[in-house]
Length: 87
Image: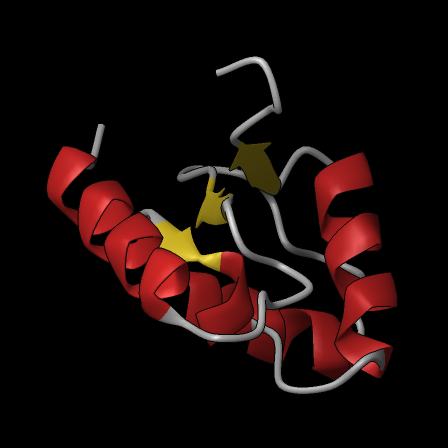
């Protein structure tokens, strides 16, 4: 859905001297899903993600948000994709 975003991010990640924890992983929100019952951290993260494809490392600000991301994925509000070693 977003080849320019993905290619630009992967090129930038390849140029780094040290690989990042979230390199090769991308996230996007799923539009039209109910958000009732989300905690503040989850809502803030979902707003930051929006419904466009974004590099995961650009979205997560701290390790505590990884749990919030997992909860959003479990509820079907967010999709995470990544490059596999065989790609």
